[in-house]
Structures are given as C-alpha cells and as structure tokens.
Amino acid sequence: MNTPTDRHATTAVPIHPLLATRHSTRAFAPGVDLSDAQAAALLEAARWAPSAGNTQPWRFLLARRDTGEFKRVLDCLNPGNRDWASHASALLVAVRTDANAKGPLSHAMYDLGQAMAHLTFQAAAEGLTVRQMGGFDAAALAAEFDLAAPLVPTTVAAIGVAGDPAALPESVAGPDRAARVRLAVDELLIRP
Ligand SMILES: Cc1cc2nc3c(=O)[nH]c(=O)nc-3n(C[C@H](O)[C@H](O)[C@H](O)COP(=O)(O)O)c2cc1C
Image (cartoon, helix red, strand yellow):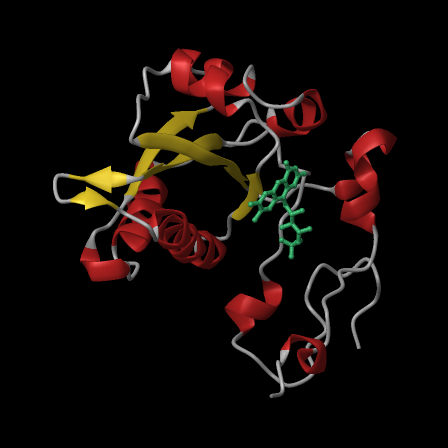
C-alpha cells in the first residue's frame, strides 16, 4: 500500500509501472533544461499516436525555459497556473486542427488527447513529468502566436523534472500533497 503522499497510484490490480508511477506535479526541479533528445522523443511519441482516419490533427508549439516564447506562453496562463508553471523546463502548447483539406475533423480533440497521452508516457520513461493545463486564455494565446482557425490551442503542458512538493507555496500545494484518487472500475462500467 502506498502512503498518501506517495505519488504512485494504488492500483486494484497490477498495471504497467510506467502507468502506475506517472503523475502530474506542480513542483518542478528549477533550472533544468529539456534536452534536444528528450524533446525529440516526446514529439516522436506524440507523432505515432492513433487518430481517426490517420488524420493526425495535432500540432505543437514547444517553448523552452529562458526563451521569449516561454514567457509569452506563461503570460497566457491563468494566474493560478503561472507561478508554479514558471519553473518547468518547457511549456508545450497542444493545438488541434479542426479541419483539413477534406473537411471538418470531428475527432480532432479526441485525437490530440491521445497524442498527449503518448507524449506523457514517453516523458515518464524519460524521467520527466507533465502537467497539462486547461487553465489558460486560448484566445490570447492564439492571437499571440497567430494561430488562426482551424487551429485551436487546446491545452498547455508544463514539462520538467519533478521537484519537491514541500517547496510549493500553500496556495497551490494542496493537490500535490493529497492522496491521488480515482473512481473505482465498478463506477466506470456501464452495465446494460
Ligand atoms: C485537460 C486537462 C486540464 C487540466 N488543467 C489543469 C490546470 O489548469 N491546472 C492544474 O494545475 N492542473 C490541471 N490539470 C491536471 C489535473 O488536475 C491532473 O491531471 C489530475 O488531478 C490527475 O492527477 P494526476 O495527473 O497526477 O493523476 C489538467 C489536466 C488535464 C488532462
């Protein structure tokens, strides 16, 4: 049994260690760069995700720490995300494209989520953590980087090496110190 502050999942049956140990933290080890090899591996993992009709409706804007792009993405985050995310090694804007030359892509959001799941597990394999965010101003971010329809910034992910949650300010520390919980599989199953 894991303790409440152990970030690993307490699973009902064994699952792959990469899945059981993955978690999103708001605490990042400061001053750590994302290497070119890590960035390449994350994007390659996303690239090989499945998608409806192999339409691959995902695009990414990778902003590394200590760059102008990083600051521009950071400024579009909600205030509650901005402080902790400023310590990440990189901010990745996950963008979906809602249409291609053949017409609308109705599963674009779903497919982008799959690509991000792939990226997240590759990150775990690289010893990195990823915290995805819906808390940002999508219109401001689209304007800042000239992302016009059908491109839609959908999430921003903070990527880096997990830091010490004890170092987080009280205002954001709660979820990073509380036990990680999930609905039971029984509650997920729809039994006709
Ligand atoms: C689409 C999406 C949006 C999220 N938005 C935020 C956010 O704005 N701020 C934040 O701190 N965490 C955010 N999260 C992180 C979730 O709160 C976190 O994944 C969830 O609590 C489960 O924790 P775990 O990833 O450690 O299992 C988001 C996650 C996802 C997938």
